[in-house]
Image (cartoon, rainbow, N blue to C red; front, top):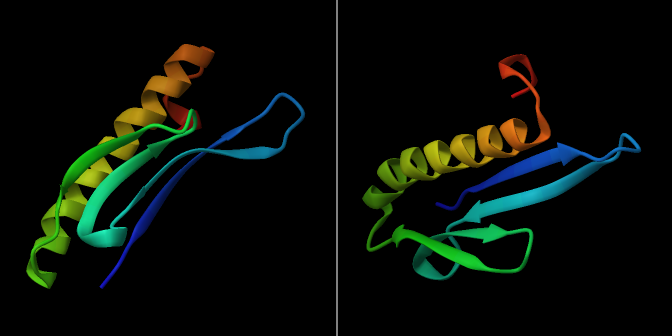
Length: 79
């Protein structure tokens, strides 16, 4: 069982751009930032770990998106 969560933003020209990606490749859930850095979320030891790690990753993606929104001066309706 695998998952990926993508965070996209809209550029000034209206094109969507991937800002962050969280996936569980290589037995570890991790966040790929747009600048090329990677942050650890947690290890996958067995399939039963996935639901809890998905919840953590989902929360992290939402916080990432809200931070980007706030930096751009948006509002809650845009998330």
